[in-house]
Image (cartoon, rainbow, N blue to C red; front, side, top):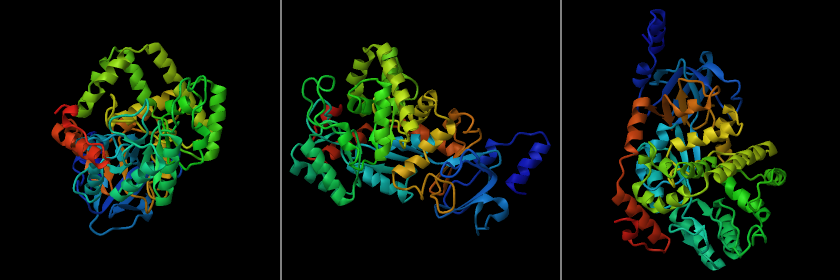
Length: 481
């Protein structure tokens, strides 16, 4: 008797059998046939999901997605009953900070099958390879190299600081040689450094993302005098994404909360075809720390934040706890409004959480971002598209991922609730398929629990190796050891 027939018999007898049958589903690799599932595919028409469909997965790829009557038979495929479940493509968090391999499980447990790490170190390259080879469970790990910045008010300890053009070009060449395929730029970059980074990256086929560089910040910027590098100068430079709406407001609007100017700016961003990662939750969490005198930074779930980097965040959290919460809430409301303006103008928006820094918890922070987007007026179907198909388009993978069709990578999340009716449904995956590997709810819970089991010594080793690789050795004592 098949699982489907067992379920139907149970229903006829008035019994409830849902999660236990899913829990018994296959855990390892191999062909899969998932029956009776509802397909929500933003790459096609998510608002008209395919009901009672079959997914056939082989070698990490979807080979069929559609009606049962046309589904192919695959020798040796293990059958999973998906009746009552909705499936969407795996979620993508386009802006995270991974400091150690422990956090990988928190992302999978939240239905996130791909992350883009925005501050690279050598261990990221090795970990990404282990994940793709199936040695460890984790989301696909894309990573930039070390953040490139120039000395200035926004420089941080883990930034690779470059000034002259020759120095900037050498930094890009070194990141390319190390195996990084993406460059992250930051706001203090001088014109000569930024232009050298941009040109060298383009020559090497490397993608650029990050904060829009502003140049040297002279007194009176931005209210009384313009930035050394105008925001509009960046728009035709081929950014993979521009990060953070608050950074766009700062640079592009000279920190003015002016809806009329915001609409004009959004139209220019849309015309340039540059995707944006809003990360509304990043500022909202700052505002919540201010509103709670810092208590929000100690809420349940923060045990998944890396304890080594949290030591370095202590001063930052204390400073935000002393801020005026009313002013920060007002700013957060405008950032939501501006994100809607960007969408209305036709800007391609992708979802990111800035997880792993400040008090942004790995995994669940993407769902906190979804809540912010819902508050801003985005529908569940649009939010799902931002976190799946839009991300694939921005990453240049629009025909390979973020979709539920033949030849798409088999990254899929299954829900017992309806994600089109309530975006909070996305917080509760019933199962995840990552590159064709079935991960049950129980396995996801195990991975999530492991995200709190930190190894400070390993994290410090990661950081020390990373700093040494970019030519700025660090004393481990600075990190608490």
